Length: 164
Image (cartoon, rainbow, N blue to C red; front, side, top):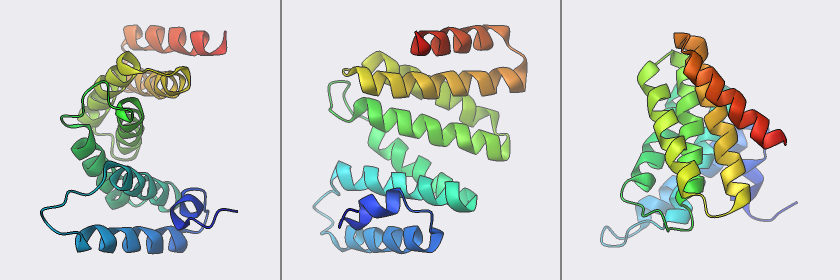
């Protein structure tokens, strides 16, 4: 098991532990001088931990926090940035979860758009596969909500390509 509390929290099934690590990371980020922006990697970890907390507790505030941080990270991040695909893929996954929780169609439309960007900007095959999987899920969810056959056909094509 890792000594890194962020890594441990990311795989923990204990919502209290995840909440404690989130709170510690937030306190650390707030302690940084206002002239020093928070490192992208710490913000990405914080977003991931908020999403983990949402998965464990169903708290919409947690997924909304993950989305807000993901949007902040994605905004202005150039396609050649090392975390471009991962940030957008995680944001899209969180937006899809928000739709599934609140039936907010705009979150799902944003998820499809962000995940499409993630796929287009993917430099590594593993990152592209994760983004494609998340995009297929978002498209299928949108098809289920709207009945749009183009979405289900695109989702089926994506999942077929991932399996083959």
